[in-house]
Length: 137
Image 1: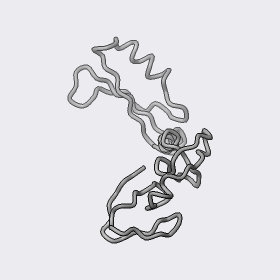
Image 2: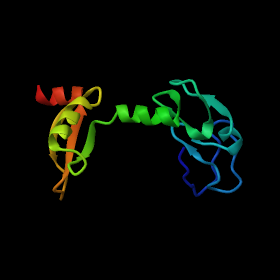
Image 3: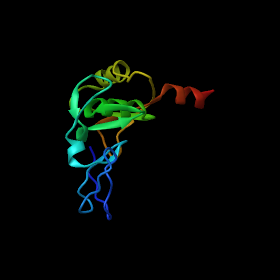
Image 4: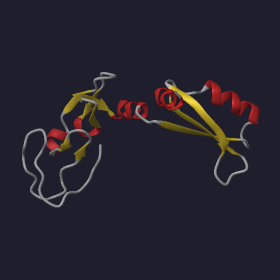
């Protein structure tokens, strides 16, 4: 999922083989550098059950995930989410309704403000509910 180069030969995190040229083994999040043989092996996503190549998977919170579910899980751990709305595309009253209706699950609306250096963009900032409650207690 992440391709980074290294300066010295790496060992495959799965089978232990050593790369002949530094930087040829791709990096898989939560696994480490792996050889192309191991990268092409199929693994099963522990959330949706899809089979994907190990190269396009990750290990996150101890589970093997496909790219789609990895992004969803990472999103869950974000403390703040900012959504933008354009007043040129919809009226302010509609934006305010959307801000309340489309509130992400597990988040509390903290503020609605004008976008930086903008006369028509609005930003709605949400914070993880448990963080918000602990700060306000």
